[in-house]
Each structure stands twice: as C-alpha cells, then as structure tokens.
Length: 357
Ligand SMILES: *Cc1c(COP(=O)(O)O)cnc(C)c1O
View 1 (cartoon, rainbow, N blue to C red):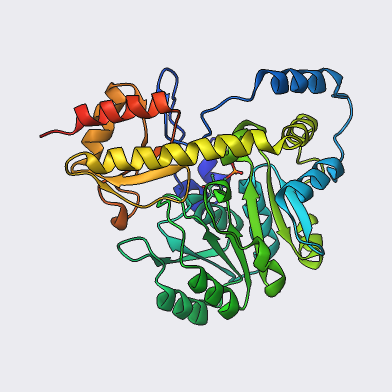
View 2: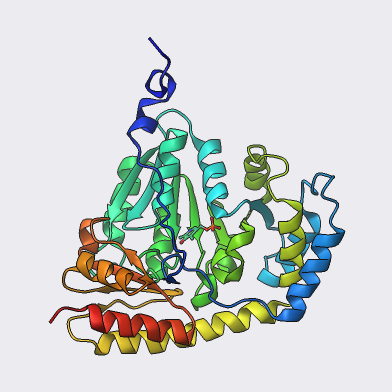
C-alpha cells in the first residue's frame, strides 16, 4: 500500500482546517487590521540603505540586542523586566504553549477571541478551554473565575483590546483573573496603539503576568515582529524554546530604524483612531446596522444577512472579514479594518449599496 499522509500525520492535525487567507489582489483590503499608510519617502530610502549594507551572508544577532534596546526605550518597558522577541506574536504564543505543554495542561481563553490561541494549543497538545463572553462581548468575570478554579489553567490568554470584537475588557475583571490564576496570564496587547489602557504599568504587581505586543497592527505587519515583556526568570525559560535566529537581519535593522522615529507610526495610529470615530458614526447612521464599540483599528458590526452583504461587498471589490459562523455570538457580524479616508468612503458607499432593503 502506498504511503499517504494519513499513515503518519497526527489524527488531530488531519482533522484541522488550515488557516485560510483569501487572495486580496485588486480589492480595497480591509480584512486584516493592517495600517493603510506607507512610511514617509525619506524613511523608506533609509531602509533601502540598511538593506544594501546588511550582511546577508551572516546570521543575524541571535539576541537582537540593538532592536531590544530600541523597543525598551520606545515602549517604556519597566525596569527589571526583560524582552523576548518573536517572528510575529503568533510565534510567541507558540513558544509559550510549547514550553508549558505538560501532559494534561490547559490553555484558557474567552470566546470569541483571537483564533490562533485555540489553533496553537492544538498544535502543541494543550487542551483549550474557552469561556463565552456576554452577548455585548463584555467579560463574564464570574464565569472566568469559575473556569479558572475548575480548570486550573497553565496559561490564560486575554486579548486587550479583544479581536474580533474590538472592545476593551473591564480592567478590574482582568486583574481579578490574573490574581485568581494558578498559572501564567498573557495579556495580548496587539492593539495597544489604538487603546487608552495597558497592563504594562501593572507588570510588577503580578508575578504570573506576561505582556505581549506586536508591531503588526502598528504599521509593520510585513516585518513579522512581536515581543513579550515579563520577568527575567520566566523569559529565560521561554527563550530556550525559541529558535536561535528567529528575528531575521532585515527585520532587526528595519524595525530598529523605524522605531527610531516613533512619531511616524504614532501619528499614523492617531489618524486611524480619528478615522475610526468617523467610520463608526457613519456606520451607525446606516439603517439596520448595529455597531459595536472599538478600542482597536477595526470595527465589528452586525447587519441582516451578513454573508450576503459580505459577498455583495466583495463584488464591489471591498474585502472585509465575515465572522458569521465563526461563533454563535458573532451571528451576522462583519469586521472592517479602518483604512484611509478614501478607502473608508469606498467601503461605506459599497455597504450602503449592498444592504438589501
Ligand atoms: C493580529 C493579532 C496577533 C498576531 O500578531 P502578529 O504579531 O502579526 O503575529 C496577536 N494577537 C491578536 C489579538 C491579534 O489580533
């Protein structure tokens, strides 16, 4: 009998559906929380020089010291805390999961939330348990505390603000979860640049808290760079699981240079926040559209027959994310990334035309 994948691949992997990224060529691309703005010409030219001078024949600095120093300064990393860098924060979720995947270990999350937590738990052999959010997507703190007491999770992931809902969970509720947790809690601040709250100043208060960020939503999604801030004793262990050269030489050089002028990305984030307000108001004015509050660079909204509306938007060359079917609480929900003013107008016009009377 010829050898086929079914003979060798783990049953749980065979059953998984691959993470699907649709082809977006030719679309107004508002599906993936990318920053729509490019870098200024002078900065792009400087990156060109860095690329030209980079020693591509050599391995990159395995500790990425220059980049870490830059991140430490720009992000205001508290004294006494260390940094662990990942090839995107997706890789950091994987590093945390691999290091903690003892037999029987549980990863806890809420749902709906970022789908990679569940996927990576499965890859690494952790059991994933999720507590449903309330219907308005707020945190059900009592249910979370109950799950923590019953499941004794090794690690809990909380996206703050949450994706795909966009809201910021109650700070006191998250604090109570951290305090009640027997394991690590990773607060995932992928959207920190668009929110007014962070657990960074609270790191020293909790021995079991790790804080994760990424530059992806900030405007550097193509570089693949995320980081965890936390106590050195935890990060030293997690670092053993990290592959030695996970941050390539161009990512190290480019990110260090771009973050050397932090105002560039901060100003873009401010423009996106302003546009978010305008877009939310315009959406709320459309008939039969329910808009959910956002502290991120995207907006979740509900329309009648969302899958039809999604297809109609696509026909008008606008790509958003269809979340109908992703979770019971997300029935008829679509998620739009905040684009440039022109893109947002194109989206609003297409949506107005796609809503069937
Ligand atoms: C986008 C996203 C990430 C992944 O970020 P990368 O650094 O691009 O891997 C992590 N967490 C949340 C909540 C996200 O929305």
